[in-house]
Image 1 (spheres, rainbow, N blue to C red):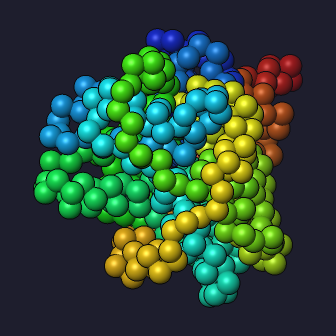
Image 2 (spheres, rainbow, N blue to C red; image 1 turned 180 degrees about the horizontal axis):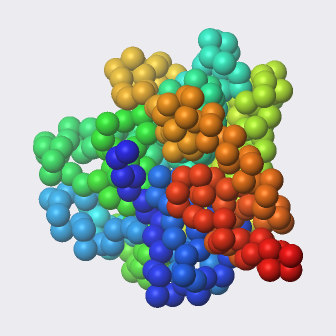
Length: 418
């Protein structure tokens, strides 16, 4: 199996073997061995839950820094949706966008503008009724990766449109090439990222062979620089051009509101999303038209690489949504982009069989029977003392040859009593 690149990394020297990350990982991608956490890369979806709960800051997200800008003749800052919520509403967002010129960028593009374009197309897609219901939104790459791993039967429900980030990056490069006569290879697009899943999707995009984004810089990395530049900036280009509805994609429920539909389900928090995906997989929610799921609580404004309290940021986005009003893009323009192949996937998203016990169906059945037998012999209290997140996970590790029954401390104690 090809190795999967991840933004989420572990600094083992800072890890003391506590089980916080072990218990919170939604795909059981973490084990504790020799009092140190270990990430099973093929299971990780870069949701950032381990980063949020680690009290020792042993989990971090890899991102680029401003030094990478020197690799390109022309640098574009792709401003992410949640950046709107990181500053108080009384601050001029257009002035903040202009601050990027002061910290080394040559051009600034608004991701929320691409969200406006998608809103118009999604409105028609929902009405067409040609796809399995509910249609699953593609904004959160952690949720897409989760579906690949745990819910592959729902891949056909995923809307085959790229995320606003990719669409905006493509449009930004095209705009700059036409405006300044530059070659595409001379232009670097840097996404101002709110979460590790977005950074990973730049390196390993879903639905695309290669991302149109060239790097990702965490919001927390440049936030203080933007605040400092805000006092000094003298350029006042009109950069902000998205509607309130496009900006609203940054918070849970924002996509559905921008599309203008009532029959939707918007869920935030990875554990909540998993529960709903289980219901969808069982066919219990096929009367719902549209599902938007976010790994982070409150939506993209809750990403671990933001700086503002997610609930405060969410409230700000709601206010800004009302402030900036309705979408002003012509729907024919959005349809033209779709027809030109600038919106849809270029690659098929395939299931990631990391949870399969064996590629041979007969052997897989035999291993599953063995797994269940071992599981019944374990205490079933999911204490994490063995280094696995649950007794079922330990049983699976034993079947895969990556653990021993003796790893269960409680099981050994019971044997000693006998």
